[in-house]
Length: 312
Image 1 (spheres, rainbow, N blue to C red):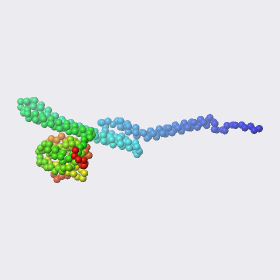
Image 2 (image 1 turned 180 degrees about the vertical axis):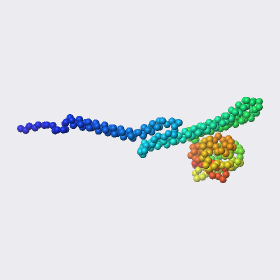
Image 3 (image 1 turned 120 degrees about the horizontal axis):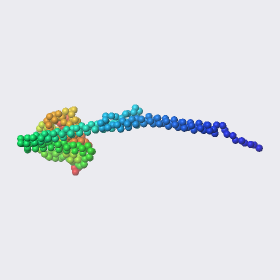
């Protein structure tokens, strides 16, 4: 008869060993958690710095920028994108500030002049030529109306209101604008028919009027209007025989309320917005408006995509 007796193997069932294993697991887990927390903290620290700086940027402190991390990763790309956005925002805000200042000046000047004329007339009513005073005040009102109309046009263009295109013959549009009322200088027409464009008639008519009005103010005796086709492009040239525009000012004249010194001295009567409106209308039609070389005077060149659709 054989008697078998079971006895525990030393170590595997020891409570002390189990306690050590459990404590070791907890310690390893805690150390891993602490390490992960520190790594995540270091990783997200730049994000918190970006958030803190971005939260403190206001309209009076648009020159501030968020910190850019040294590591080239997604967070650095985020910081660079935020700074690029702030650059564009600061530029737009500065442009708006200048525009508001210039608009206020151009509105205030005729108001001040009209007020002075009326106050003087009321002080000495018996000595005033009232019809002449009325005409002088009406000139100021016309000036105000022109500025306000141009400001409303720019507001609509800035709002991104899309044009309502129809097919139109560019030469016919130019001829209609030239025939609208007589000009003070000689008009030479070189208008090739059959140059069709897709355009908003009202807006393009405004562009043409602005170019012709500008040319008339600066021409000495003649304006030449040319329409032609150029490899899939419709081209309009408006050339005057005035003093022209210096090469370094050919982009400046398209800025809002921009006037050359010669124009200011001559008091040509423009609002300083006509060419800015004209260029913005051209760009809204997918075209360009520039000043190009000429033997004499200023040569404004409008280029628009040419259309093969029949005139509607």
